[in-house]
Length: 640
Image (cartoon, rainbow, N blue to C red; front, side):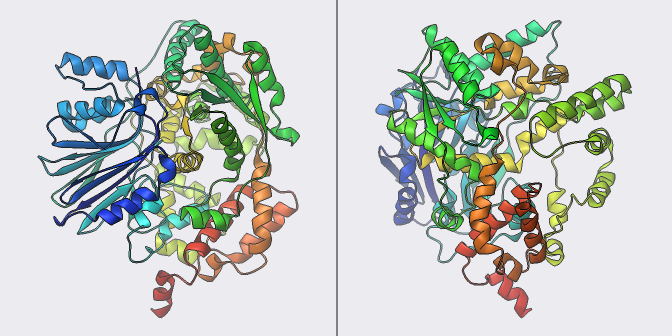
């Protein structure tokens, strides 16, 4: 079996019927040359133009070309992504009498659409963003994977619908820069990203994760196609049965992401999640089931003791006799203003850049894809909302134990200390009515941060934006609902977009076994006791792959502390920004005196507001860079 991998997409659809602007389409593809260094392709049909950049990272991609037409010439597809349940989909298509011309992911997806239309996307497991132009119906169809691993940006007016893989593609062709989206700016300044559709620019949107899109008769419609069934419950008699089932799912999640025409890299931090991936991959290699010509581990060496995980990395390497390529972690982050100018978007998070050194080294050694441990924390750690579940069922003895164990476990992980007041919140907040929650958050100053200018917060309805939490499906427990919220998290979607643009500039593709849809659905159907048992987090993972891990890692209860990367970036940027007058202060977004007070606290060793302060300064540098003079919106307010 072969698979597609990463690429760059671009498309232009003249809603008024005018011929496509070919030069605009070419500029959009040229803007993402780094996403596909092995060639480009175009397809034009009157008012519609599709563009594609290809990166040949898998066996089938060596002779694949996109855009891809079906045999009738009525359907045309461009795909950035990977289909992971290929065997299942191929069997389904052949049973329906469909002839597959090739074994590529693009062909499978195109034939699936031809067979069952828009519903095809609900059958796909993998990371993807794609569009299909249906010439017969004069209709554009598109979709994005459930977690938004692959990006999908678009803008539309009465004349044109334009879409692409990166935000800056959408800025090309505009006569002037769009106005800043003040509501989204407020979310960034609050360090609480909520909205899944808007961007920092008015009129440029994202297709939310797990959504599909249609454009027909001049109208754009989006709808959610993916959700988790809250009625599904997995119940076994023993821990061993749970572990066996999970191991089967996790092994397949790793295996299907190992397919590559070049050696594949795994980033090994020494933590439980990345070590579990390396353990499963190493076992597959020993069993002769490695769907790649080689498998290599890469690890970052951090000098601060709190971030140094080399001891655990070495234990994993010894267990599997696995060579590990060590790379020294140094501060390589470009200045925030330089990043903003290049990306035309919010800068990368500081803890991203050292990992770029691993991507660069893996690429230098011939790898073109890498496995990461992202996702294990979200789906398998458990949630403190379980305390409210226990209180609701009046299981007071169990509640007391859970609070004690959670306090111990969370304080072992580092970060801000948690105590009794936090524990009371775990028990009470999830049970409170929505109106009471809003009141509690206001009393605790957790609604609108006090560094936000009150007039600005009122103008953009920031309190309402930040309170616009999703309504989860009717899961039986509050803990399940809290975990489900990660699927609909604005932070999560934005971080994956950041990771995507970061890796593509290094000509690499990242793959995330813990974000396999099948694994997430399984994890959400588990009882909480399989996620956390006593002070032991990720209980089911430890049992399922314990024999593939060295004891030091299987028992590990701590994580590396990388806050120093934020502190380093902050110190470099704050020296230039905070002593003067912030543009965000001048334009009425923030209270400058509060921002400067936060900086003084950080300088005195109080890191409680470190992350929030970095977000403010990164937003400041993006705003300064993109809107060098006072914004039109601000000038209009002054004139009024």
